[in-house]
Image (cartoon, rainbow, N blue to C red):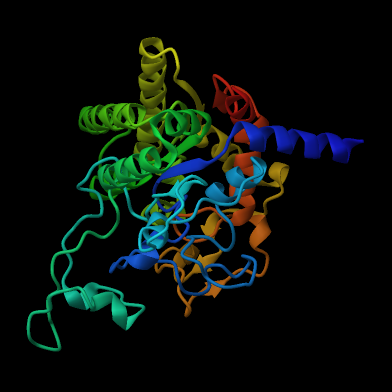
Length: 381
């Protein structure tokens, strides 16, 4: 009886939501960065060791990430990376697309430093076929490249998808399709991490850090409005987690404590994002949203790991150096035997187990973690 009820619930959810369009950073990237010439990659071991097939896919995880689990809960396949689809002459965007890119931030300045060739990680020789190399083997420079797909660029790519859907389905059917779809957004962590690393001596809640977040929110407001203008009517906003407790930021502290500055900025950012979405729904009666307070939800695991099935909530599972946070997870890194009892996979990202638990809360939970409605309720509208 319980099984049939579960299957019925999944079927209802699947029929209510035809597709998921994903925007954001490495917490949701399912392979877009595989197609970029960038150091911000995860298409190598030990990433993916617990993913079906045991191979790296470009996910910054030992297995699946939040984008995978959200799709599963909706009865859908994971939305494929845009850069994989866009190279096809008959790309199908109606089943969902992921624009998420590791390193992306609200600000275009986040992880878009122009990179010399000797710093770029090339996993395939064909990745330089379209680049202009200046003569010289060592110390060569490559044509300027962004390290990720910025959020603004993701929206630009989506505008092309919007036009493509209108051509293939007709404007009315396309608008109806998009209105039923979920637009999942997870963005902001990288902006805050970069600020906190560059301002380690700053106090939590100081004026400059608050102004920085306010600037992010100004940009985010325009970005969310652009998505609304392009058909987004069901928005799932996955707020920034307690990034000050990532192994990378803990490692900067002599006492290995969380960065109070970064965590305070995350709280401010999430509250401000909720105010933006609330204001937008007041202006647009056809807009609905669910905001997941990743900071509050994840802090439970960090503060009381045993209560949630974790044994390690501070050090990374995969990496090198103190807390496995000095060097990223690479084929040469050490990794823990039991990934499911670690909160963090590497020095920034959660394990598959953490991502799954968080998604379960976002899907069926309630305030103060997910509000004003949860994902299941959002999907049923």
